[in-house]
Image: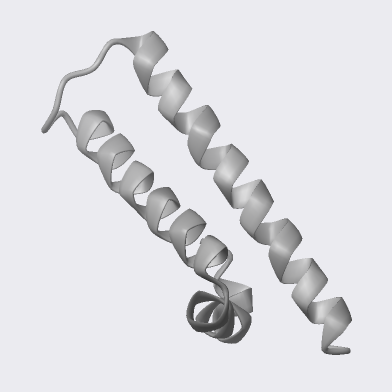
Amino acid sequence: MLHEYRDIISKLKTENAHFAKIFEKHNELDDKIKEVEEGREHMDTLALEKLKKEKLKLKDEAYTMIVEYKKEHNL
């Protein structure tokens, strides 16, 4: 997720518990979605779409926090 911000993500994960939680949940959803898409786990289409939307929402929230961090630290 957002590999171009690897350094900022690393800092935020240690400095901001909420960001760390969002990041962890995003990764959990990503793994779950991959399992379904690769056929290792079964899920109906609506449930899968719900997971994808939740993952996107978390990514958007994380990105917003990254942008705010960049502004605060003049990066």
